[in-house]
Image 1 (tube, rainbow, N blue to C red):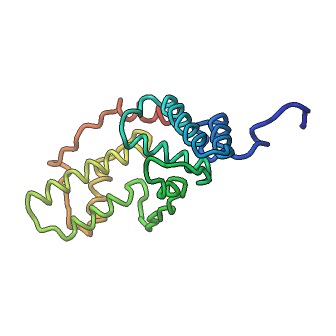
Image 2 (cartoon, rainbow, N blue to C red):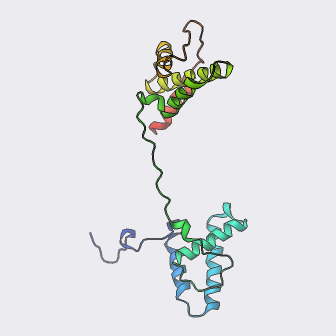
Image 3 (spheres, rainbow, N blue to C red):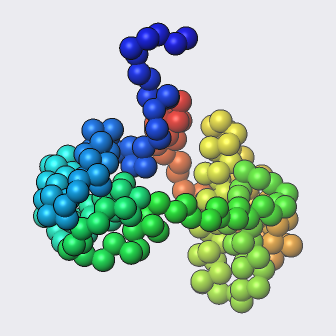
Length: 199
């Protein structure tokens, strides 16, 4: 639909830094077009003071002002010929996107325990007997129970956790179901997390 006189954002030029809005971008474009260096300098300093007032919580530090000058350089596409009060040569790094992180897709037999728990299994296999291994086994078992509770919608089976721990540590960790006491699960904490996820 094209109505004469209406100007849609989707039809306008894309903003380099949308957080400052189109009016600030127009001011920057105007500053670039000014004929004298003195006028451009004065206009640039006025724009920086307006940008600073837009986000007062961040103002005050020298680092913040440097960031504003970097943003001004980006918005002018480095075409603003003024005496920059700080080095803006590294400003282009702000606009560049970081390389995507490689997601570690490992083949784990039981996904609800997660990759970190399987790393703990590997560590438990090689640890010497003693209180340190016993404590790690206790913490791992309790973490497994919480994972099982979370992904099984509230149902847990202590014997399954003990059996899985023995199975995935190749029988190195054998907890006695009659003696081992699991930590109590705070059901309210899990129900609150699930409620937040649904919102």
